[in-house]
Image (cartoon, rainbow, N blue to C red):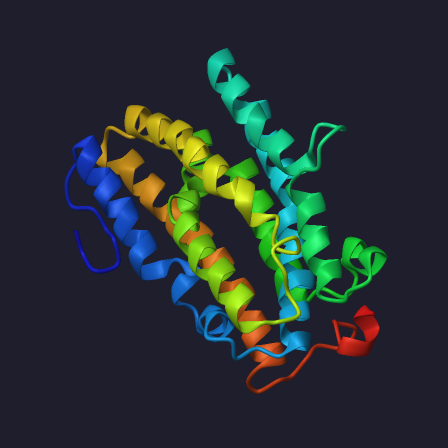
Length: 251
């Protein structure tokens, strides 16, 4: 395998999983400078607000993404498993889902709920990335769509680091504000088991394995690019696009 993750042979299932985990080790956004500033306690409240507001756009699209994937699955057992993802984020009408809990994070940082939900102050790059993710799961093969969800293999690490650092270094944030992350520590590994089993079963040639690797890279690039836009707009050089979030506009 080359440094850019080009395969030169068919891999055993365990070897493929090792490659996917290496993709995460090198390309997941836990390494991004914006995330590093966050966990080091070096973001202002306004920068934290910009992160929460823009990330809401991604959180809100997750059940739509999973509904697209669900509509493409012919196996009933897999559909039943995948359906849980939609309930996790939309809720079931009685208990809140991930979207509602993320809104609690955004309002806990001082943002107006209606403004966040409208997504009108999101960065253009954020909206572009969210749209690109929907396009990926709709237009590429089902195998690639499922493989793109495997960034969840790496999310417990980023959640553990993020939550403890924010509670320690941002005194205006409490545990209730960060309630979104607690269920994800159990949900993400469960979802990974389902997606990884599908990938291991259906990616058995070098060509299909390369599709899987490339899909995971594409998803990592989407998440990385969202943080690129936040860094450029709110850290350095601090050039915010017209119409995008500014501290006064988000209140």
